[in-house]
Image (tube, rainbow, N blue to C red; front, side, top):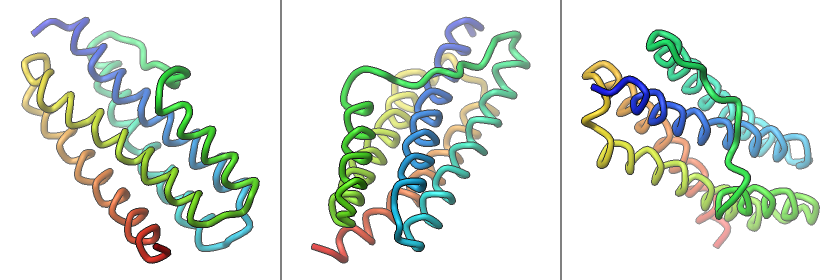
Amino acid sequence: MEVEKTIDVLNTLVEINNDRIEGYVTASKETEEHDLKSLFAELALTSKYNKQELANEIVMLGGQPTEDTKVTGKFFRVWMDVKAAITGKDRKAILSSCEFGEDHALDTYEKVLKDDVEYLSLGQLSLIQAQHTLLKTDHNRVKFLHEALV
């Protein structure tokens, strides 16, 4: 197992969790709807938990967990869309943007589970699969709320 590649893979997941934290903290601050504030706080907490577990693995490997977020590509634009949607106080648009962001987070985890398994120990693989399950649950909560408005 290549340690540097393992650290890179784990940091990819840290980065997507950083994106979720930043996006949901922003969304929670901007909305006035109490149920959404509560939901966004819970979703950010999922990623804080995931990030800490991943960071622990990275440190054990002798690496440094990233504090970066993705500032290019679709995911960044999605979170900017969330902020714009929140400014308009449009619940449907907020949830639509959040669902799209959740799709991207799941895709990132699924890509790692498909393409990078060779760089992960069984323990790391188990950890990532468990986190993927948590993110899928979060995704489904957002999707349910969004679909209820359609």
